[in-house]
Length: 420
Image (cartoon, rainbow, N blue to C red):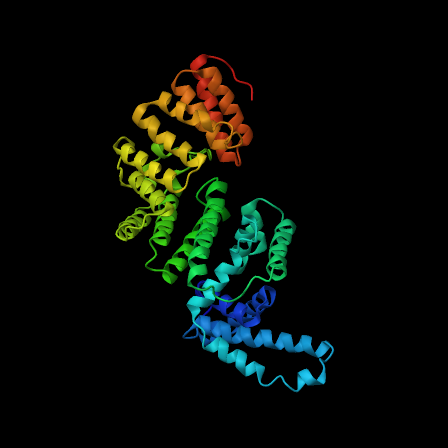
């Protein structure tokens, strides 16, 4: 076999299981990662000739473990010997460790890996970077491109995260049932942040930002396999699928953002949508609503509308009200204002977002919506000020291009030339 695409797929699929087991075995992120990389090199050398093993993850654990043990032994030979009383009481530690590894469950290994990467002691940016490197196996170069920073800066960020894990003494054991429920929400948030990082950075459906969205969906599916009866994980997965289903329609030929109501719905991914809708229906049957389920339900109402004018804005407004009760946030209120504008008009929506001005003064989408509502009401001068502020806060070229088009429309309507 000369085509190595199947090897890449097998290694990617095996990585969370293998890395989780190697992390528990060696209790050191760097050593576990090096052991896995050595196993990957061996796989690339032997699998094209011998074919894939029956269980690639088990093969990677076995080879990676042996490689790591060899490295530990080499380091031990270079280190001073411990006192004789310690040497005489070691017993067969290697066999004990091997038994512990071989008798473990993959589910706990993967959970341990996810929990370590999403530990609250790490800042969110470090959680995302560490998860993309350790769990997903993205290169430092890929992660740096996604975050729009240099490779050196991203290398430092990941290194700091690893050092923090070691310095804080973050446990490598699987949390008990009580801690697991609390930490599960943190893991879900980390996956959601990975998706948002790619979704927000997108200037089109291709490229590394889209890859981040795909990776977040893959991690969410992995978490759902570990917790198949957890409705919030179903909601998270469905939400990511619905958001990503619109990737091809989100931008025009110039790379400018196309609003949801203006998108060509024929470009939406119907397979993703169908999967997500079935998942939401299943989650709702558990009657334990949570923020991800509600957000997914809102996205589902958009997906079910064949035309923008058929969107059930009344139900969307009610869902946003429920989300505000569960998770009060000015951003949620801002999103609800869009539904209110569709139902009651721009004046009502403007009154709703007025009190949010101070808290969202540095938020691009606040000023974008503010300008759009003012424009609808014919308050051109105020709209221009809001749009100028939005451009100043844009985080990517697509956001800035969209707002510039709104300013161009204002210029056309008033006959004035706007300097930018």
